[in-house]
Length: 465
Image (cartoon, rainbow, N blue to C red; front, top):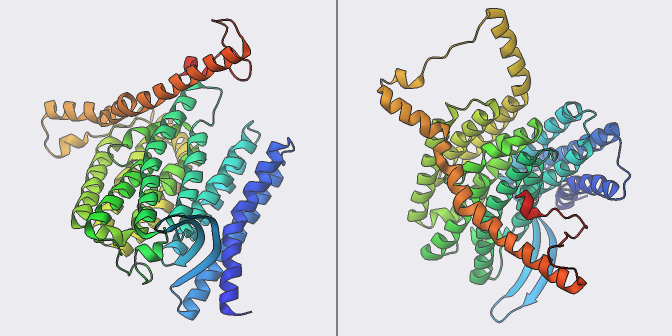
């Protein structure tokens, strides 16, 4: 077997192993023949270990052969002849100095979370549902990490967003998690719209969304963008907007504490380790486009600085440990974005990998840490007092009070998102839902005032919202 064939076979194993896990768990759930907890844990472990082993083998081969850019072509799935360019959905995976570390990180952390969750959710009613969504997330992360074209990246990006919103609403017996999951989904939809417009713009400008065509022929992080400054600014701004929504950068940081409604394991993998860094990964992948426009690089640095300062500001007053860790993650992600804007791509990648591992461990440790903290307080016979941070810097008390209020309200970003994005977005769909019901009632001849939902229940989505 030649080296090229070895790369191709190992690359397919990396991409297919999470797809098989998702198909196995999803199809068994659809037909009502769910796997047992033990079988689900074993299937997850085998899938992760198989993908991780293949990724490590690819890394070893790249180090031995000196290859820095390996492409796995899977052909065009959609081809539409147009006047200037043929629009095509090209499926391609790329193994390079960016995708290989991020893929290995995804397998390692997802494997750790899978092993933790198999015990953490033991005998829980939603055990199988969690692992189905977990498998969707794993597939989305691997596809996003290895994507060689912007449309392939968007495919994985959507899988990550879908599983994220559904896991925020995991505890369906309570209305608050469902409402928060809806808020997260709305913000993701707004950000994904910017991503989709950017992808269509790139196809219009170049006829394809291949990253090697957009960012030059050199291996990452080398290469120069083929777009001129004005086009790079427009496309890069759209991609930055998408990254801001996915990574909860300011002004989209308001949904971050809402996402903590999910299980601890999903909070660790999503908002501590992988999903929250996916926006930074996107900026790393399109780094040459950012460098093609100085104004865009300045905006990236500004967004990162503001997000880092806001995260540090808000994390210090949180009374919930998961929210405090989430805002601490935002601080580090903001610093990573600053590093990307300054062109320090290797430093940003190392920072990303190290922070993801540390934050996942902290969030997994959080439940037992609270138990240990309470045990310590019981042993001491009282609460442990902490000195005010503001007193360290000599900040006057009236300013400390104002700063504490703003930080406690999380910069009022959640209220602004709710008032100006979520509620208008949901209102449009309320209107659509009402019109659909009226149309169905008119077709079925139902009497006015006896509108029913599609499944026959008189309660509606509007009543819930």
